[in-house]
Picture 1 (cartoon, one colour):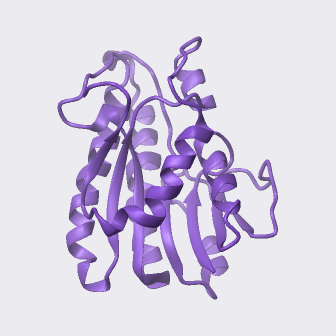
Picture 2 (cartoon, one colour; picture 1 turned 30 degrees about the vertical axis):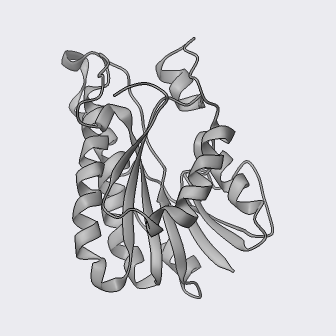
Length: 224
């Protein structure tokens, strides 16, 4: 049995990815969600409530759930997206974006290392907005910067965790039709739905670290 941790399974891509992984009878999913009541249940889903928007995130309940487990993969999926002109961002909004999109993966990974098996894979869900040289869009300065930081963290962790045989990669996703995208860009239609992207990530999480380590890989139908 493989154990895979996914952050942000409450909706959108995280929910689709959790359901896709659970189709594999050899996988148990540990999923974090802000809500104490996840939208779905499964006999191989261990759901843990973690308030990711706080500047002092408490991982106590998550670590308790992991005590008998050795993780084979971690997918840092939870994210916040705010679409706002650069000059209109408040300090609190910028801090929230970096807290959820960068600091939480950083701090959570520190806590998770003792629970990770040799040969395991950490996957950061980044964004084409944080991929150097890609087309940028107005209103996403703080979001894109936080995802860019996640890409650099990927490179650093790949070096630091080599001796533990843990590989780390980042997928810079193009737009996906999730609730988060619809809230930030009402009326916009992305080329992919969450289930389609979940199929790709499922395979990459299980096999991508055989070919890549410390890489940020663009996953988009558009040219960067």
